Length: 495
Image 1 (cartoon, rainbow, N blue to C red):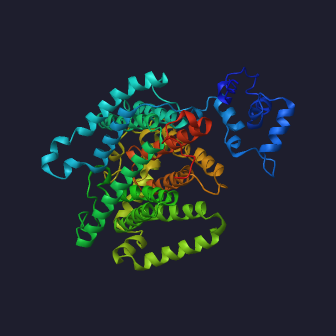
Image 2 (cartoon, rainbow, N blue to C red):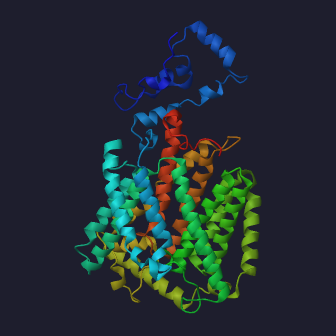
Image 3 (cartoon, rainbow, N blue to C red):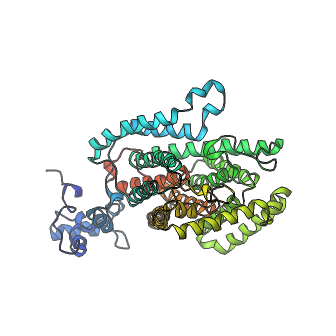
């Protein structure tokens, strides 16, 4: 007897649409899981199979329930990019992204003069990665990039930055900033396309967590030794670049803490749970010793959001517990930390308030194209940055650019919430459920802490959003056609 054709041998995604969109009622009738289950059966066979295979509640067997849902078919037929089946490929491009991230996070050329020859290695690794990525992507997908909403918003943001250059007070500074930003955009686009299995995603997450642990241990050790390099009152990051400033270091650790918690909850290995929990504890302690008010505020907000997400039936109790922990932690924190946190009228706070007002004024005065990227310091009363990512974008590239930036941060949240809702009632929740919540909380933490830091054009948010896009693409691809993915690709099963 010939083998029965599989459901995906047929073309529910290519049938002609009615005017106004897909006929969802017809799809429900012809291509629902139950219809597919009985697609080639006579009425008598339908009755016999239903009586033999349905459970007491009348549901189809587990194997059949795992078939694509109507929402999957409708989404795919409308061209939803996160519902496309991911193909194998981009191994070399992924290696380039991993190596670039390793250099970016650890900056080995700062550790010893013997490695000074690596000072420009990040640039050349990025160039090589893009050179490998472009022909591979064209051959694999037939385009330069998947066009998710976030990718489109980044491209619009890049256009806004470019348009601000000619009218900038210092076009040279704007052009330099634009060149640096292009590297961020390019690596972001490559990541969105090459991180297409769960193992790839977790490898990058583990690299970020490892860097966070190294930075946290160094920060705690510097504080223990009294090595206060910043004005003799605060530690500075042990690694320069994006981690040299204690406020930026705290922001990074705020975004890493929810991911460490999520991975701890997702794994069933007791050893891994312990190691991830240790990572989260290190991040929290390091945030405290940075004396970053924005970092501590972001940490408290992420703690509340995580409690709301992970303890739905005990929310009131968890709120009380978190408040108690915050009060106890504050009471036992270093005296210098309490003094800095409670004193909002010190010189640093006054300067930040002045720069915030100045940036809002410039955003209103130059609403179309702003004053030019990296040009706010020329208008600042203290020759400082805005210390606020949102007014930084609005003042430097205009209100349209600020809207693109804000939408870019918000766009991943809805798909992540959908993954969370779809797995909320599962007895054994898949890894995707925990990562979806972790990334939501990380993005919220970034949005809170970045209100106190000029980081809009730096790497922090772009890595987080790339992780979120990769997660949903892997998850959706595994739901549409699990057999089409490599063994390590699916995020729909408990690890």
